[in-house]
Image 1 (cartoon, rainbow, N blue to C red):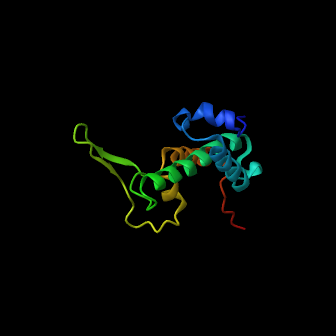
Image 2: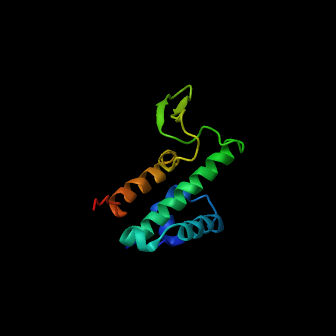
Image 3: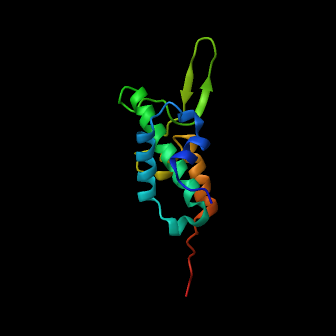
Length: 128
């Protein structure tokens, strides 16, 4: 099992090498508080790191968007080269409360969603 440490975060996500340790640790600590080790089992440490990366990326995107949230997250739907044109999908029906949509905003959230499908116990309807 991967432990949710700053060192492991740095190894998994070298793309955040310009982000200071204190900020990353804050997101790791928040993820640890939010996620149940009992429910996630052996996937917990890796899931915590991906949850932290997801929230950190959303924070960076908000800052890059001038604090307005920008449209710098979401699934990439188009791109160009010389004229630099990038398009991200946004869900017109989303109110921001749908966790599936929220996790789809970054590749880290998408990975976390896949971990959830593989690791979290499914509820079963039992008829008596």
